[in-house]
Amino acid sequence: MTSSPRLSFTWAAGLVASSLLILSGCAAWAPADPVAVIQRAETAMGGAALNTLRYAGSGTGSTFGQAWQPGTSWPKITVTSFSRLVDYQNSALRQEAAVTRAEASGGGALPLMGLGEQRSVGMLQGTWAWNMVGPAPVASPVALDGRIHDLWTTPHGVLKAALKNKATAGTRTLDGKPYTTLSFTEPGRFEATAYVNADNLVERIDSRQPNPVMGDTPSVITFSGYRDYAGVKFPSRIRQTMGGTEVLDIQVSEVQVNIAADIVAPELVRQFAERVVAEKAADGVWHLAGGSHNSVLIEMKDYAVLVETPLYDGRSAAVLAEVRKLVPGKPLRYVVNSHHHFDHAGGLRTGVSEGATLITSGAGKPWYDKAMSTTNSIRPDAMARSGRRATVEGVSGKRILNDGARTVEISEIQGSVHAQGFLMVYLPKEKILIEADAYTPGPPNAPAPAQPNANHVNLVQNIEQGKLAVERILPLHGRIVPVSELMTAVGRK
Image (cartoon, rainbow, N blue to C red; front, side):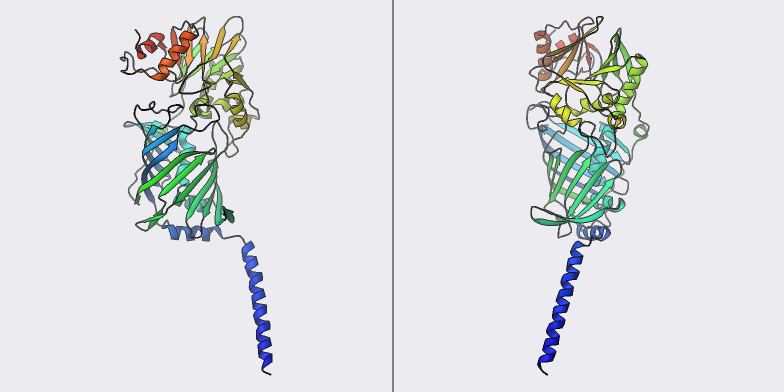
């Protein structure tokens, strides 16, 4: 009689244990509730009542899309100051930065090595992006996708975006560490997966966003060293890669919670539309300006050549519309790309959509072949919508187009610190040189600088070595100028 209860108890305990194992197995396979995951993370991070947040710091980074050689890492920079104010309620952002070069070669709007810093102010509200140039707002639609991504891939922003976009939850192990994941799509802007650790803190975000040059481009952002700021937890270090190369590594030194933001897109920005101003430079040659980046249209006997399709579909579509108006009935056979920096290459896919062959440097061709094979699936661009594939021709040394009436010489600029695989275009009959970034004219009648710009000096050397009888320059930034202005800029009269 004494053993029977003991046996019954043992049997019952075994049954319970077996049941618990079965239930725990079911729990392991059951999908997590994404709303519950978000709520736990917001509670742990103090984000439920967070409307605005400003964080600041300094560190290092690189200039995305401005590699010295095609396919190499972006040029390194020192970030002497960095701040980002985010307003989640109004989908707004203000970012300020001061950066200097950490290596001599490569592109970007930074002063050359040792010659100072670049300060920038970038803004976002809703679907409007703009920059502040002094007190003046200047629309920057090419920056829109990136800034929307920056807003909603902050540690707290990603939770709000995940909730809004009905994220799905899962589990994943990275480097032996388990995470709960939240995956979602911000329609037409980016796809993301946030990694929430055992302390319910967002530790990592993997994402893809559309890019005018590279197609769908991966990004990885990691957050570490969380600290408490007035009840809100925020990381002390933020690192980000894009396209496999680190673009930002910031040590956060200051965080402000729920401060006034007041970021409102000016009417000038809201009403912005790309415009193209065509200036005839010679018979059958037009300088297409009207924005920050120019193009040049050259009319041949049976076809057209366009030098540069910059920035993004929106700018280059407006340029192509002007091309069709100026040379109706002639196909656009070639688009010449001055170099691989993204602001100058951002409309190449638009050129492909018109059926044009892309002419770039021999060094750039393998990189473009690969980049152009990656589609923009998150928001299909003009090339994706056209169904066309890119045909890329590389120039090593010189390429001449001649239809019996006009000669176009496409040649490499040698020895530049700005870019390797850098093309200029010369029209010998018209004595016109077309170039980008090697020389951007300053204000009319400006005196020669105390120290000549190395890029300007290099361009003069290439003109002289090529024995080019240049009389005028059609720059891809700025106004048409006589070659004498370049000579003045390098200290020659």
